[in-house]
Image: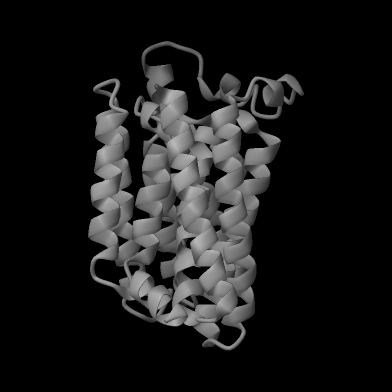
Length: 307
């Protein structure tokens, strides 16, 4: 009975529809500004893209909508993310585009095009949130994991990352302004203890809940993947690397929490789905129950704070 419940949640056809209905209810209940439509659209697109990612790269090697369902619930339960529709919400989509290109470069003999576009999406994202440029070293790390690193792909990445700034510089010079990029990254390395003191408590609690589920899912996925195919093991390793890197960056730069937490949620959802599909035992059953309780309490708390 225990394993049957986990199996039904992980592979059931109703999991995603139920999650979507609950998510829409949360969005309607917390609706406050028309700009939230951009965040809602972003969440819907990423929910769909997670299904396509699993189809294209066989991240889980089994039919499951659990990653999409978990992301939809986590994203919609974090009501403060509804408010970042003025530009930051597109960072998640751009990062997903970058990740797609990275995964497509796996063991490709001519991966330069994929790497160029991976860095291009990241560069465009840094125009919205300059601190996102700190994720550039992460992409180089992933290139080693995916066996796509070479001098050719290295320079393709540098060109892709710089392309948006070359275009901006040309435009600034055309209209007679000084190049904006000269002052664009002035504040990205600034750190102050007040950044933590001024962080809203609801954002901190939500981040802790997501990181807790992510950490347990990540550790279990790494253990479970040791018995999986080499390709899947590498893919799961890549997802874990992204989650760890972006978590460290988010902790070091709490001002970027709204931009980076959705990325961590996405990686968490993939690892959670992988864990629940690949392993059914007493621990995963208890973890599923506990994680569901945490998400429900998190949603209730954020609703109480919102109202």
